[in-house]
Length: 271
Image 1 (cartoon, rainbow, N blue to C red):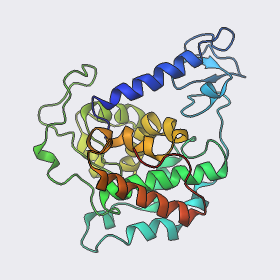
Image 2 (image 1 turned 135 degrees about the vertical axis):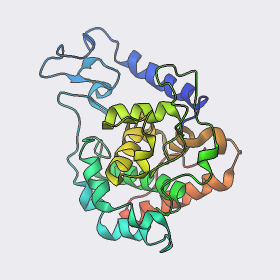
Image 3 (image 1 turned 90 degrees about the horizontal axis):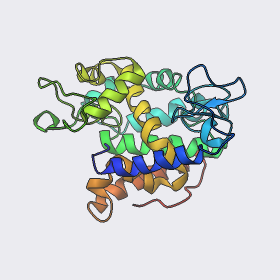
């Protein structure tokens, strides 16, 4: 997941979004009860009516939503086709489920629902491509050997690490690092810093945590191509020639799922 270096890319994206919304007449105030009924509250906390305000991760107001029924895209055949690739002995076989996924995305009304129907399908393909790569088609719930690794970034003072807890990879997108657990906990409603293990124990929270991470970090770069989503998720370890085999694995899953959903991949696929 996002490492300290990758935060630079995300900060740049956030600054660009804020500046794009900072045109007089478009942004009036920090969100709260200050937005008018015709304004959206942007993911950066400003009121306005532009696509930057009402698009991905819009927090309130008349947010853009294409009203696609995700259950019609993530069919039982699609989801079980992934799950059935995992061996019968895999712990994930009895943990991950289509129902848990669909229940989770009900809390995120813009997940894969911004843009055209084809855009929605590509975003679904991208999400499950990364999940398939990181969990080996839903075989694993937790990162192998993760408990022995230190994923505490002490520079993130707002997310103090509990020394008795481990912030290693858990869930569909293998949520990692204290700050990602902290953010997911705030969004989803669990104690991410003091009870990170719940992501590996509750299937609904597990999917919600991954979708929260996706919406906060990945969804905003989908329009730049699948390769940019790889860079955001694990670019420090895989992109720019660091681990081309893992990059190719993610791309292969993405192409496969795009084909199954009847859409063509667009944009740059590699990083």
